[in-house]
Length: 153
Image 1 (cartoon, rainbow, N blue to C red):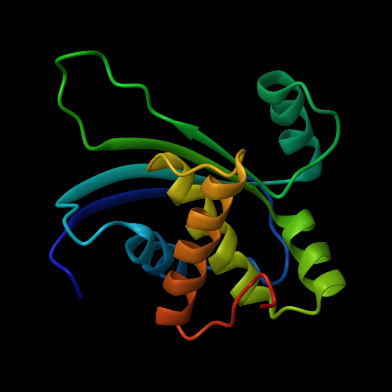
Image 2: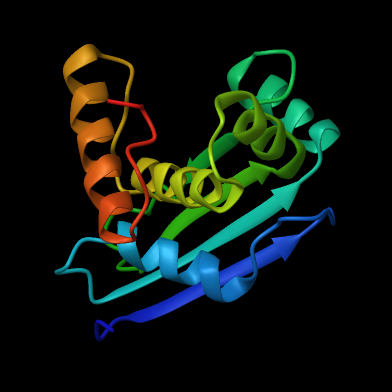
């Protein structure tokens, strides 16, 4: 295990079968962090469809649930912090996507945690070249955990 000062606040706002425990979430967060990262602090909040729908509308202007939202911390100039931000994941959407896509549930959870953390680290997928970079990174990180390519290639 890497020597990193990692604080992950996992908040369970919903309960359902297959939701990963704190140890798994911490492992996936650790996998997403760059090797040179010495410390990090973030929150992973697991929610229902109502909460993610409200957040999706408020912050993205999009109606309906989504699988994951990331809220990077915007540091004040000149203030050093290890705070990365918050990742919100919708448990019912993760479950239904895993079934619809024929993916193991834990693999899909790992993918979405890593995806959310990469957004906190500045990755994006709005442009094709940025999407390719992010998808390649996700695939490599998931392979390091023993999971298959989430994009099916």
